[in-house]
Length: 248
Image (cartoon, rainbow, N blue to C red; front, side, top):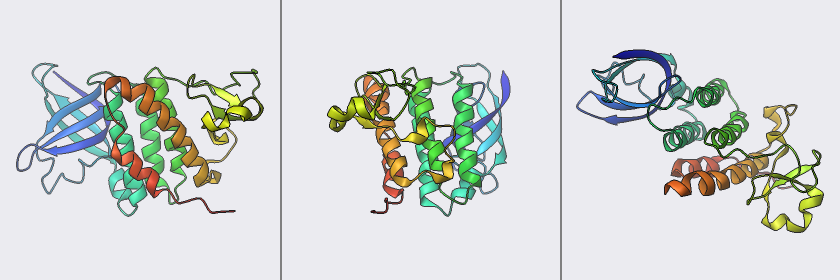
């Protein structure tokens, strides 16, 4: 059997002198691990790089077999990010979290589209404004895994105004007034996560860090811990490389 699909290269490992074991997140067929003959050879090495968006052709005698994959490069995200350690860490964080969250041969087309959007933004941006998209990706990943947060209104008052906290217990938003007495126990909720009007290039590093602190809590405690999995180290490396907020 065989299929053709668009996909994201998530990981590449050595299989033989020139062949690679490629982890691919395809839009319509989910996560697959296959052999790419020549994948780490000189001619094709540039195609099989984490972060790259490809057109993949997969074939195997039976669906449960590892099979073989051939890929055609659509967007060289890895090459575009090569000069930026922050962008390379972003690719690593997206790739690692997808491998932790998605089961093999289990399609997640909307999650695929969002991950692809982040990688396209990263590849085409000369700034770091893709980080706001990345924070939204982590929110969407939680939702796709069944751990969606309710950030639409205050859990205590029902108000939709001045939402600035998230309860670590319920995953629901809390307004500044309702959460004032418990702010030390609350997680931050930056405005750009709930607003469609704030341009991503105006989001400040401090807001990105607050967003990743919040999403990281739920990824770690709600999604990964029940599966006895840990947060990938590359995500912490990404956080460490985000420019430090300028003191007022």
